[in-house]
Length: 310
Image (cartoon, rainbow, N blue to C red; front, side):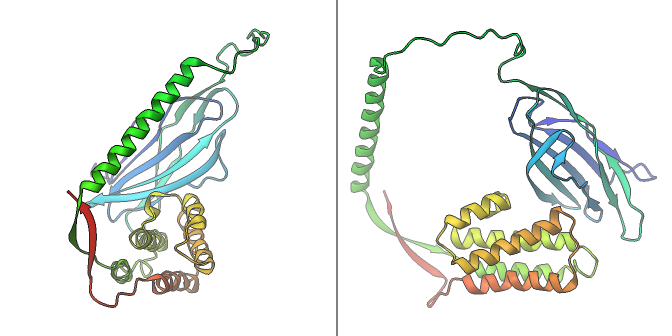
């Protein structure tokens, strides 16, 4: 990543409760290339943070995708929002600095800390002399058969055949052994996470956005543990595309999960403020989804699997 200088916000005693930085993965791109722009905030755990809102565009760039992450340790946490941008005109552009709001207590007025601007150079795929480039005549016909290419293809095919035969031979030599794995059902973990979430009293303290980050994360981790879909690493758009082609859910469950995740994204990123009934509905939707898709075990939590181990 190409980082800008970190910006610090201080209290009266000189302590820095908040730092923010803006960065891009590249400072020079060709027309149409994707750029990842990130705003990262490090703050004390009790500090409330509000990221800036963008529409479909960020300055001269179009926003094609976005996402967020949150982590931390001890008394601090790190929050980030990222945006995938592109542009189709050459030139030198600047992503302007933007304001991140924060406050220590709900009754305190909002304070602002500003990121530094980021400069991006966008060049034409034809190079700097696009307007004066010479237009040349097309080359004559080329023979379709290339002996060097044909020999290379044959060599690659031969290597693949040798590898496949070797793998088959080694598998036949392996002896099956019994491996016992202690597996905990995914729904038990998810139920505990939901119970712990409700114990944090996010809703009573007005932290609705944090509540939606947590409840959507619980469902994504449940889906990964239950169906082996890498839901936490995907954006919502990527996950819904994967979910449509997967056969682990029926059409009704896919529809309810799509509605649930999109509603969560509206609260998390579009700053939508749901009512109390909508919040209760979102929680019940998450719990009902786990109820409907949980794995019913008739014996015990010990699953016996046979695998080939040398």
